Amino acid sequence: MDGAGDVDGVAERYRRSRRRPGAAFAGFLVSAALLTCVVVAFGTSRVHGWRGGEYACAFLGVTLGSLVLGAGLAFARPPWRSVGTGLLLGGLLGVLAAVAGVVLVLVALSRWA
Image 1 (tube, rainbow, N blue to C red):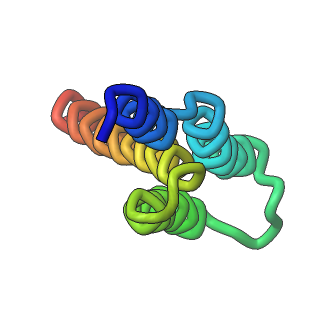
Image 2: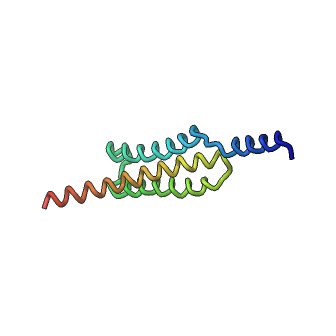
Image 3: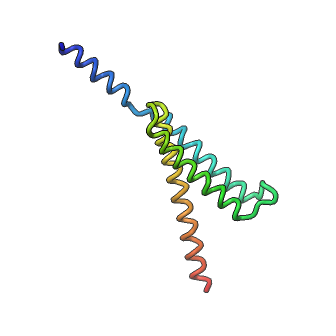
């Protein structure tokens, strides 16, 4: 094996393993947009007949769906791997928002009593 072949092999491996920030951002944007749509629908009562519990289930469903789909795509071929990373980050955002909401409710209830 000559030196030029080795350099080409390293360059090819680097090209394949390179992250795609645009794809990761697109995955995050999809997850964040769905979570935002659920929150806006809850605030404006856009879905008639839904109560708070249905919105909470929809929010958790989007969050868990993003986490599961992101974990599945993390093992896919390179363009989808970055999308999976973005979905995982969006799902993590949903988990953090849900935990913050629960903490806010618990603090409010402790101050009320």
